Image (cartoon, rainbow over all chains, first blue to last red):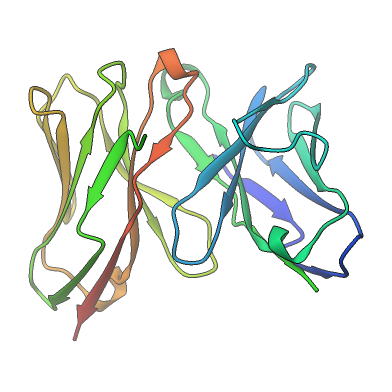
Length: 117
Length: 113
């Protein structure tokens, strides 16, 4: 089956620093990837759609300059949290849709736990 | 406006019992309805999914029932096991929304031994 990986799985940083999270599709190509944020005991909230070769599309209320997304290749999307603050601490998860008839089906990465001190 | 409403928020079931989680949607353009299982600290994993052209889909102990006219769908877990204890999310998507998933708020299932 399709596998999506994320790196790192866990990161702790100081307030004001930037953190980069990678999302890779390991055995398939993904022209689109999605980035979600999940706070404890809450549902997944879509932050943005990452598009290979073009700009990301951000959901309403998500700061583009704070959450930089780069879809560098057909298998890699990165999310950079710039000038992170404690309120950015969350579980960040990416997903990628399958190809062809299974395009609806999204494969999720294992998530990245970000803690900002 | 929440487009997918999920209930109950939490559910406690005895081992061997049936767990039932319900969802209702509003957007008639949705044409794909998956259920995801998530364990603490892990990403969601697809459990089972259904499209509106069928009313029921079964995979092992997991069954989705779908009612298009009522815009509702539910997950039934038969013979629930302690290992099924997790958070379950229903979701919906469609071509019109560029396949973006809209999630329900989740149900924390606890199966007691």
